[in-house]
Length: 429
Image (cartoon, rainbow, N blue to C red; front, side, top):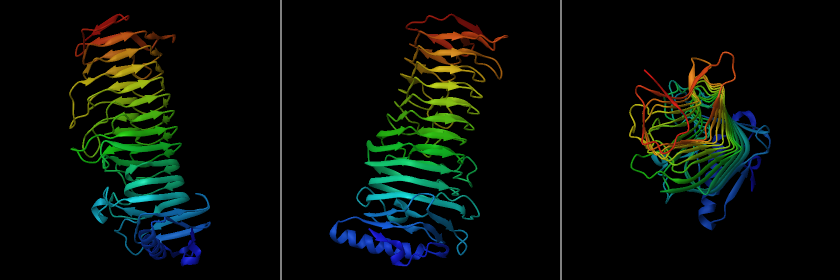
């Protein structure tokens, strides 16, 4: 471990420390290449100004501070007003990053990144806090990233890596809502093949431009990777809370997704490659007070399980199955909606607007929905074939009630070859 103050860092908030950081990263990176021993830069408490250029990172070099409130990196570009200035980056396009030329054995921990002073004429996807690609055995923890023009934590292709206790707020501030990136934590996937062993845990994302947390397949012909988990995270006030735009078997458990502007949890083809995730599991989450749907799933070949969640007080439907234009819209197979508590949502408790095959809607508790415009416990507004429906408890004790029926099949919807149903359908035009 080396002390940054002994290598030309001022840490006074005025002197540009970026040249000293780049020199030290290169010096230590060269040493790692010679003897294979990783090095760590320790930045004691202070404010480190990083101006006009991002730092190109090297394998085996770590960066740690004295805590996210004590050690702060303030990004700005007064001398290069059109240049994105991430604290650290290493990418395939700019630097030739790949599985054979990766950033290995690194820790980024215990510091803050403030991007509020970056000015750009338009959105630039590189204007991140951290922007590393192809990381092997990385450990990112106890970070506070705020007010970056693009994604706060925007690192892709993370193998044998953990992302823990990262607070990302107001990142993606130049994102219109439809740009690439612009999230609190945005992670491109697929670069390591069909398995990427990544755990994102105990992170908080607040009021970011697009997603709080998203996983996005980066090339359409790549395999959706397995091995990714999002555990115990909080996503609030973002465009979307947590999104799966191209993983396989993503596990989202014990998370809170509240007050997001479109949906709490989203599976769709909105990512760069227009490929949605598949066969993921969302369980034990609180999905509450989102402006649109609580859970929105579509454009997927299927296999998603949504189980044992509280899905309540959302402005739209509690759960909505639907396909967005411009991406895959074939019927989704093997969707499981089981054991959820859906209540006080603005529209239907569960609404099926996209075709399903062999779906399971089992043992859900659905009550008091339709607060905004009326609605049913479950509305079937598409072809649903071979479904299993059983054990639902659907009721409304309001006076007058807002949830007008248990199971409603619209003129556009149909239940074909239902395996088992213990609900009476009410067909409407």
